[in-house]
Length: 82
Length: 328
Image (cartoon, rainbow over all chains, first blue to last red; front, side, top):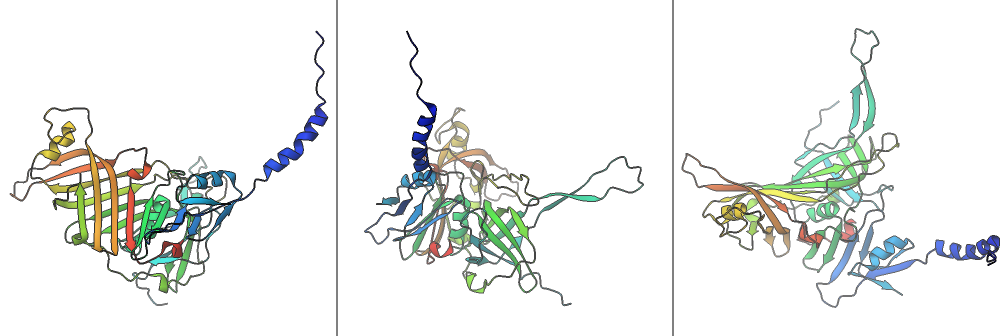
């Protein structure tokens, strides 16, 4: 059986480059404290160290750091804004 | 030159936005019982076979800035320091403002970096950058105030820094004292506790790296919450528990007895500092014979139990009128 022809590597690389470039610049994600209707609701949150996330009620924290964004997304006191 | 009274030294603090960026303005300042913060320049001698009749000189081989400072526990002050120690803070409520601090389960090795100004007013200020509060030791006994000693590690020290404004940042408030304590062991506040010591240790290390006399980082290690209590010896329940794993046990077992421990310093509905260990493992239970006929007391050590819910190890709740958002 004749070997399958190899794909032209140069064209393959060229095709994937714009996609990689797009992945290297993640979209910033924003988070805020979940609204709490009770008077005793959460008014402020401090998290993390480098950077520190310090949020008052009503404030929004935006980050392009994917790892940090994932961590904030897992924080029950925060919600992601659209 | 005039002599300087030795009771003027104080510390001012601000959280940094990240490890590398020192803060410019302090957010809180505190007066002290004692302070050993120091640039920590390490000097050693390096003897060699140089045929000299004189001892070798000192050489500088590094710097480990940091030390301890001890202060009285205050409900309007220590919410900030306990947050800095534990790494996560949640404020809720309005009157009082309730500050709940614990380890962040999503980033259990994290805690904020601080800039600390060690101020001798009008004389000199040493600024420590990239500091972490690495340990707190809370102690108290009848007839006394409640003290807390914090340990600090810093990345870098700068001498003769600009003295910041601090006067309005000092909290003017009575310290917690022994009569404000209720110790609750296993859900029972029996009024039998006569001495407390609680240590919250982040076991923070230091990675020096090749950064001259600054360090690369001061990473937190494994959290250890431990301490000791002295209580009246009125029955054998805790003695049996500590040795058999059960308050009703008679036979030694391999079970380590655990029960909850709450140290609550309550001044009023709006001023309180509370430390909660969901499960304290009891060890080293001793009851000493005393020939003077005074009441028998037992001493024992405790260590917080590992938990899938890391805030079970230690949670602090401080109530006051200060929004921590103004200090962080």
